[in-house]
Image 1 (cartoon, rainbow, N blue to C red):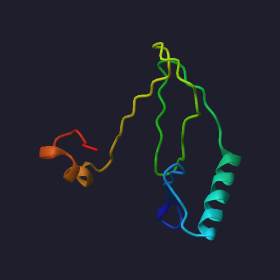
Image 2: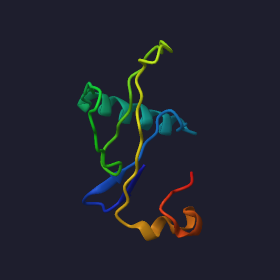
Image 3: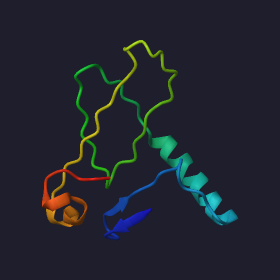
Length: 101
């Protein structure tokens, strides 16, 4: 979950996809979730709004909702920007500009 520099670590966490294998691990995940809840803020986006998030230092998510399937449900477009394009070369066919996931 933590990486990079000790002075300025990067954080990566996915509570939906992370499962603890010990009681201590479960307690640590629960404590992290509680601490993040304490400092969380909510933003309501309107059509046309743009949010840029640095995934190395920001934990983010979306609130639950019930879709209406009427064409007015929320829609998010995800885009990635890289500062070091060479690091993703192995995941881009023919060294192109499209990352294949």
